[in-house]
Length: 288
Image 1: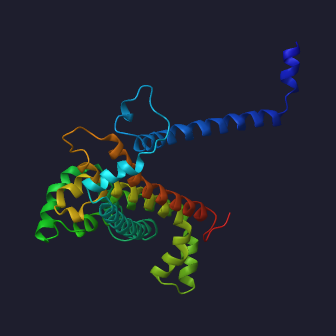
Image 2: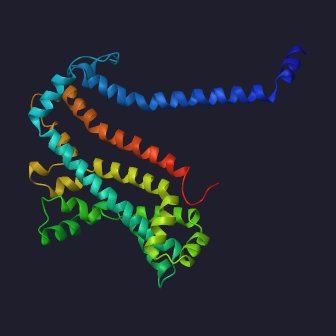
Image 3: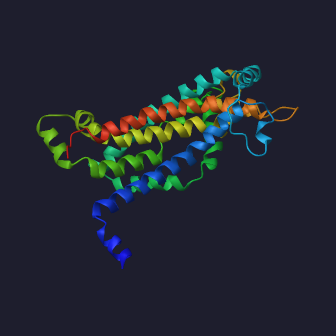
């Protein structure tokens, strides 16, 4: 009887506080699980090469990071590869966001012959494995004399089907046709309407596409390995792969120090674009 009275005496506010507390506990646990691999990578990067085999796993930060990273610099031109990846990833991301946004806007808000057929064709290319396009793309790059150049990495990736699909779906619901019509009545041209009316509204989608594309290009290993020959043009993933060729066994401290340093630009870009996404959600042509 007393337990029933206790349960009945709880107010809806108490139940809400308990639910929020459990929710935040789960969020904290999820964050810890997500962060732990990065922390453990840093732990191994700051200890000697045998720390990775330590049982139980070593969780304390050591003082060998600079020594480990010094061996990285002796084995490969790490910072040059880092700048190469930063340049290629930035150029590809800017072009993909711009061209895919334009294409998605056209598919979403304009009527033209064979519109649906063209869009379905774009979607169909998503089902084609990337590996099947490597040989014809390589032949084209060779005919253009672009092998072992940054153009071979940038130009084929300047637009992609996923980006067009993503932007088209977002623009279809986020940009109201009434806004476009009012822009036309005010005398705005097609690009002026796109830039002044559509872009402020679709900033969150553009930022998300930018994050995904930057990470994809940064982590790409296969295509740069195929087209790049000169070590001065190597991207960061090829530079990291060179660290695995060691006759004396793998130096995990050295490898993890390089991997941790190569991950930092991704984290910085993610944080910057995440803030942009939040800003885009609270601004634009449509106010809730």
